[in-house]
Image (cartoon, rainbow, N blue to C red; front, side, top):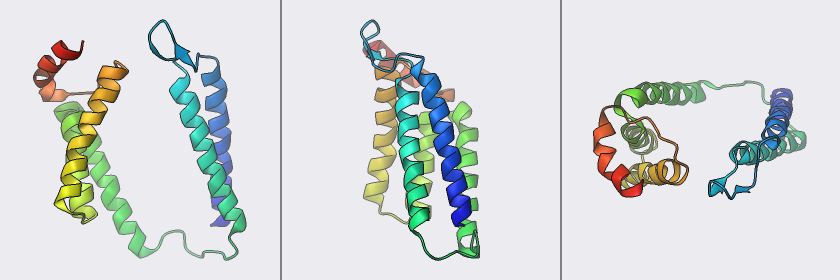
Length: 162
């Protein structure tokens, strides 16, 4: 397990360095012409964060003393399969129902049913996440997310923000 952790962490660090190298060719600072970040800003900074996270995994694996004998236990496999299936359904729903329906449905399932959290936390996150995503991607970055059959519902918002 430690060898696998180290190999994957080193591969992620190398991949992050590769992404940062090519993102550096694009402007990574604030672009005064468009009033937003340069085209390389998000790939560069996210790759840097990914590299730091992988280095943390590498350091943790170097400090561990005991070897784990099994990669997955039987108890861990069932939740992994459940979340993978739920994410597959969410990705399938994106072009049909849109991101603003598919993501809250996934969050409702993940928080309430899978995670057994309370209705208040589940409701707040299921509503706040699509609102945040709309303002971050569509209003701030001008990146349109898939809306599926909900596209007409956004026409009044487009008239207000664009």
